[in-house]
Length: 193
Image (tube, rainbow, N blue to C red; front, top):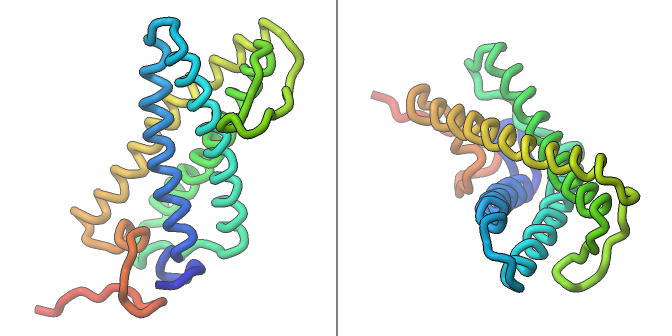
């Protein structure tokens, strides 16, 4: 399997980062939605601390993913993809990046403006990135929550488009983000009748 992206497929690094981020987003979403209804116990405090640590990890992984994409490029659209679909896919990808930065940063701002300490997996403290402010705290938590719901909609649209291409158009849009043991840079072939 190739390490870097080619004109036909995503490489191993992009795939690893993509699927790690997908799993991490799922865990963060589940944890974020369940922790708010927990009774006020040490378990709730631990759930919030884990959510914050995972959010910071997401911020790091998304930063790496974006840097890798800028370095390694991206595959060209699957042949035959209409221009309007290419534009929508590009806009969706960049909106996903914006939200995956905005959500953890807004969480960090909320944490800072509320005066809470921030640790990464109890290993080290991170500095506050804003002064204490009730107004800023309220704005940041709204950005965090509404950003999550918008991200969820975009992720569902992104996955739905990939499955649409796979199931109804029979192209390689989905397959090229999955591991393959074909020779690198070889586009998938369709069986001849």
